[in-house]
Image 1 (cartoon, rainbow, N blue to C red):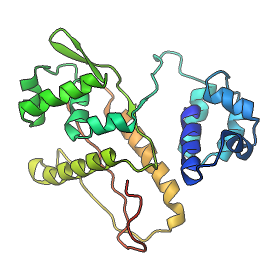
Image 2: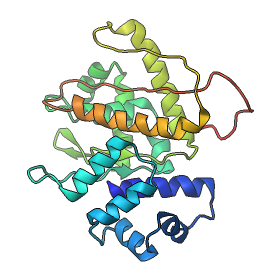
Image 3: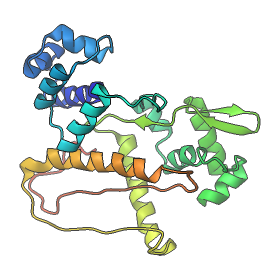
Image 4: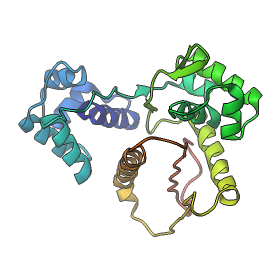
Length: 252
């Protein structure tokens, strides 16, 4: 997890300043550049003193710091090692930008799911032609593989870059917002939870707010995945300004 947080923070800083280097990042973290390189390349174990020092320099919530420290210093002994998420580049995202690709990936992980295209179409409310196209796309980008008459998901955890404009992600978000609108009339209040809050904010706290949202997504996912999965859900969290202070730029 430390490597993930370091890479995310380095990506955020290079997006703000394209000339920002790994050496500059090490300088700002107040550690040797060789130490940082070894951590990022997973060639060095991180001790408690180094971890505590680095955590002070990263914009982490108290909960993130607690989890990071417990997982690195006292890693769980009985749990299988979890593979890191696969980072999807823009070429792959452009192929699987439609919402049904992600829904099918999740559906195929249900233990009792029927894998025939007609069954997938019925479960997700799709036309069979769309399912066939999506399955072909997912197979072409190696996110699923055939095993007889069934499909196996090759990577359960996926990730995308943060803070970088992506036309494919923007299209996916638009489609999911439309799905959320439809859910208001298609599902009962027992099956859905769509709420909102309008507030005044201090803009300087937005980075911290985004981190809290990211942590909430992670925690909620862990909660809902406990036990045997029997359904596919989508979580949308929308935080956006209602006041316009400048023209639209760098749409993401």
